[in-house]
Length: 266
Image (cartoon, rainbow, N blue to C red; front, side, top):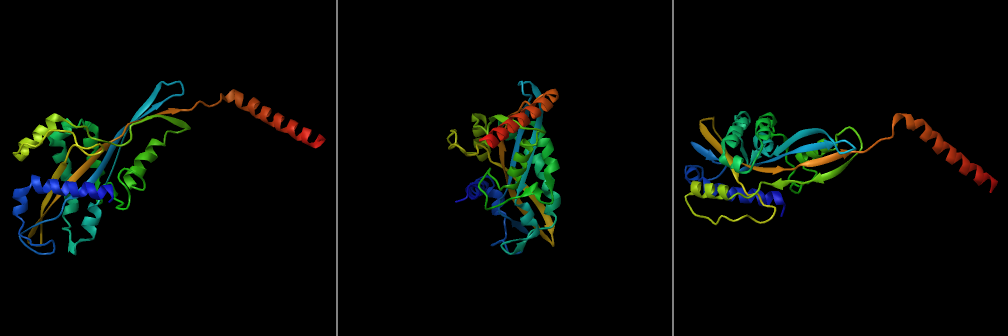
């Protein structure tokens, strides 16, 4: 099964636990029914952020650049149908409202998400939801995921030949005992505070999209953020001094001419 599908199902399960009272308020027996309150399924936003550090050939720092890309399935959710039920048009205007929910969540502090990543996230909110439309056939954090391709293209755009001296790869947010205790407090239960399996996200960032009033009905959806960080250090390769380019070129020509002359004699 695709890793994205596994993540989506896990997030949906988390929502059913976190928002039981809201789910009970759903008066629709199915997604295609009309009623005063309709709840759509959970949707996922994949957010990638990190810092590119560029060093000179001698190892001194040239620059640091913050990179952030995102993708979501909200564009399809808005423009097409979900189980034959059209999504409310007003949802497009509501996408940016998810950002302050993420910014005010105590879990963002536990996860050490930098303030610049949260601030810039507003700029990624658009008609697609956030950034690019997901490729459901792609494995998580790998091309051809459009947000991953965009992230990696910026890593390679350093203005010259380079080598990568360090690359963390896409990392999930680290486990925090404080976050686990906070979650238990919110749920009102005592779950074991232990790290999840390797590669799993230690945080569930789920927020409400809506309610949106459309044709007398109120629509609400829950959106889950899967957040990954990646830090890369690259070093530019040394290039020949301009004054050495001509002598070096003449030397190459001389060597080639000598070999050709010897070949004729043979």
